[in-house]
Structures are given as structure tokens and as C-alpha cells.
Image (cartoon, rainbow, N blue to C red; front, top):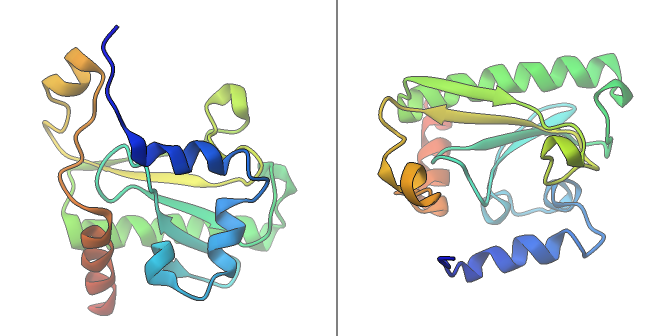
Length: 160
């Protein structure tokens, strides 16, 4: 078996055992830049995924800690989908992707890394963004630093 050392993932793994919630903790924080929060709306917010599938991978979540979609109030659900729409618009302006994967993993068996706080993944995609690395070795290469991506998105947001 081949091993790929990824010590930066340790904080992600330990986060699941800390009892905290990355969405609640980051939303309560006062430093959006540090927490990579891109947008705040009335009921929801968006933030960059620290362990993205692709550069620009955003997660959109309600402020309220809710584990299931049907636990959201109508206002929160409408706010969630509106912020997903706005996130796609922002990513189009900032990154010019060819398409998007938008979805939710509801429950641990569905692949939810944070199953106790409902959220939507918005992943920009480009033609040819799958190369030999994920196909042959199961390794995804993200060519841009998270802080640099944050600055690009905030810059595009200021131009709205």
C-alpha cells in the first residue's frame, strides 16, 4: 500500500472528536478572513472548505445548528438556496468555471463529514480538472492556497 503523508488533515480528523461544530464555531467567530467565511446573509453563511475537492469549494450552511434538512424553517431553507445561488454567481465571476457540482451529504452513511450541521457543497468544475493524479493514484492536487482563493473571492464580491 502506498502512503501519502498529509499532516494538515490531522486538525480535520481531531475536529470531529472535539465535540464542537466547525460551522457554529466559525460563524460565531469575529474574524471572517481567518475562518474563510465568504458571505453572511440573514439566516445562512458560506465558507471555503478547508479540505476542498477543487479550488473554490464553498460550503453553505444555516447559522442555526440543525442536523436534518426538514429541521430548517421555511425562511432558513429559502435563505440557504438563495445563498447557494449567490455563491455560484460569485464563483462564476471570480473563477470562471465550466460547471458546478452542488449537493448535500445527509447523514454519515451518505458521506457527510459534518453530519450534525446541514450544509450544501458548491464545487466549481473545469473541463479537464480530473487528470492522472486522482485517476491513477487517488490524489487530488489543489493548485491554489486557501488564503489566496479567499482573497480572490472577496475581491470579486467587492465588485458586485
